[in-house]
Image (cartoon, rainbow, N blue to C red):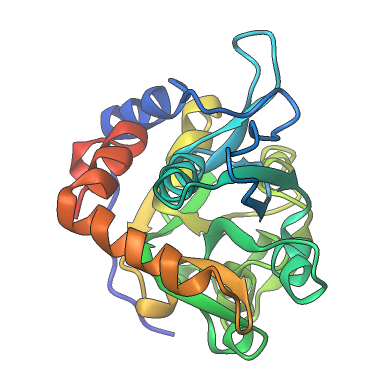
Length: 267
């Protein structure tokens, strides 16, 4: 697989992203992630995996365990426009999309890419963010292309699109782990040579792991974009998509992206 390298992102830019991600956001949720019920009783049950900072993560800075992040702000804003409340259900990432087909959630938002395989089972909104691919490895590795990962040991978050991307690289050994923190630990413990993530999540973990480095690659195609997932035939798809379109037009989406990622990530 050949992908042109875009070179290294600066440490200053990465640290600024991480600092923005740590700012948190106020929502109507309690510490358990359950929103105050809306006046008319409409509740949207949202599935996510809260280990995916800055998109969704557990904020413990205020003595609580509130789930916050870019995705949380988006779904809360949309729910407010629809006169609904949000009930968040945190679960392992492989269960997030499955929860829709099993009837355990109305919506899933967790940095999910609309791959052809997923589209067979669930529906997707329009995309709301287009990430770039990042390779995380120990400092000095200088992996600037997928070709340089050939024959290496890669740790990847299980069930993500990056797991499939990694398996296409010639001669690699892929270890799939439950979440991103486990992946980073695998690299720090020298049991893996590198991992593949989106740019913003990679930046968050680099700030906490100064012995690691990041090289950015371009996103391969629209399947790498992030979108909101729904059960097939969901009544929420059309109204949520309409509100998402309005957010793009009125600048609200860009405000949320800038809040959590920084102005340089606004498209």
